Image (cartoon, rainbow, N blue to C red; front, side, top):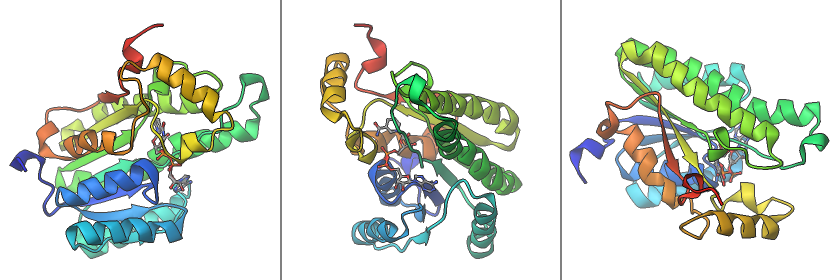
Length: 256
Ligand code: NAI
């Protein structure tokens, strides 16, 4: 591997890494050399990710079965990691949820839950971790947004609003934290075939729409996103901050 992509000796946290895109990110970062901290509410499934990493790299991972909207647990985890490793180099804020519904059916509870997991958690995690990163003048934070952060995907108002918030949070963190040599960037996927989409009640109808609007004419796989994550986590992207990489099969480039 080209040296600028190497993550040897780095400690990386990936939230939502029990399955889907987060699991693929964790495995990709580990293959590039990082030691992984795996965070998810699905505590049992985290062991599967840890086993995949062990098989592929021989390295052990740390797992935390915590909710990323719980600031008390986040702060305790960060203190424990600093005590054990002395540093955190990379944070991937990946945990996220969706529950597609027409706008008029969205409840206050839906709104609070989706914005809480998708946006508030990224603030809580980033705040706790960045306070440690600035002490060493080094850190990479990667926020999972979506094309829904800058385009309106129908029937997903709280999701789109939360991801738009993620893009603004990313830019503002870059503005405030560049003086400490932190790189803060986002990834905006199009439609990726994971639990989020599999749980959609109208999967088939949604798929037909996706194919019709995606020039590369297929759904993305979690593995399609790993290159962007490793790039943003590595020194290959050290002159990038406050921006986003769109990985969407061309979807946002075309208007049908
Ligand atoms: P997924 O549902 O397969 O995985 C999400 C993971 O986050 C799960 O393991 C889940 O347990 C965890 N999680 C959810 N709430 C949590 C909480 N409160 N605390 C800790 N962990 C929590 O979903 P997927 O598709 O892998 O999504 C990952 C990220 O990618 C999300 O931020 C999502 O919004 C984003 N994304 C996904 C797209 C897709 O088409 N699948 C498209 C654009 C963005």
